[in-house]
Image (cartoon, rainbow, N blue to C red):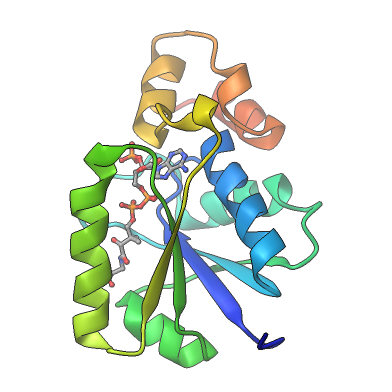
Length: 162
Ligand code: COA
């Protein structure tokens, strides 16, 4: 095994959910180092700023010693190249994720043929979870405590924008 192997888990994480943390924990067992790379998704309007999402993710993964949080702008393949990685980790929750993920994995490989995407399955209880669903429940004053890490719960509860 390559002890310098870095796996990158990219996403918008707006906000991070327990499903994301589940994937990060699983990746941290497999790879020597995992970088959670947070970025702006051009197709989404974000609730939290990049800095806020980085902070929430740092607080939520502080117990995982081989996990590092970073942010990037531009193409994922360029970010991977800059940090010397060729492995992308993504979570596959249900069959409905497959088409989007398949397209993204093959496009990344088209942009750089060295890139490999590894898919991990979250625990069953998180297969229905998404960031937009958490935001919607928070806006409508539902109970979302079990769906997100504590740091995210506090931040979302105190968010004046919702
Ligand atoms: N648990 C809970 N939710 C999960 C999840 C899991 N294990 N896995 C995915 N999701 C949810 C997310 O919460 C999110 O939900 P939302 O749509 O309600 O916000 C959704 O699935 C996907 O979000 P995420 O995993 O954050 O990815 P994304 O689609 O926001 O980000 C990027 C995709 C950022 C990786 C991609 O756009 C990218 O690489 N951008 C950089 C530019 C680039 O290179 N573009 C070309 C790509 S081919």
